Image (cartoon, rainbow, N blue to C red; front, top):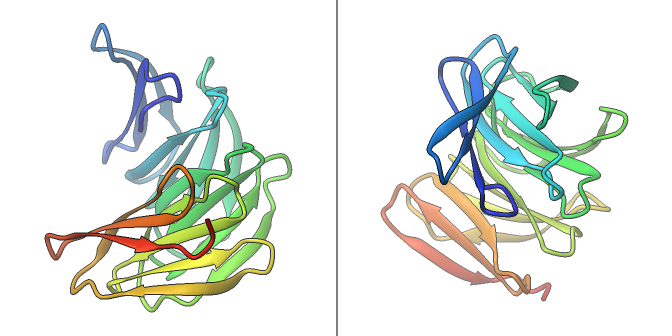
Length: 194
């Protein structure tokens, strides 16, 4: 993951750590260690003060970017946490898991705020809409789902890929959702929300 200012990159690794790198110098600045299994995903908060990591140990963890100190652990998934993302306002974290759920967590309290049920297999990736009102999830079940965050309801299913939907993203105006799949295609969909 790139930092919002584009100066740093965050990597996740099977060695149970995430690392912060200076892009210009190509050197490691900090390591975030504490997970008990592979780190599968990592993301910056909008203000770059925090990072979140998702791991095969079934947790997501919030870290202070400047110190590397663990700030909070998000527990609740029953299997690997594969995807993580911060909401645009930095107040929530979304996670996707091999337990076939996506979940919304309150950054301040560490509590689960919402559970998104609808995928049949692993939720690989999650992304917030630019206005923070919607979440899109991609899954091993070959679909992506658009969720209204406040209600937790699925508002649109994106069906057409023939393999895992590995990547999901919103356009900057929120009008489109881009999905990338192991079927060797990327597809652009109208979100219906922009």
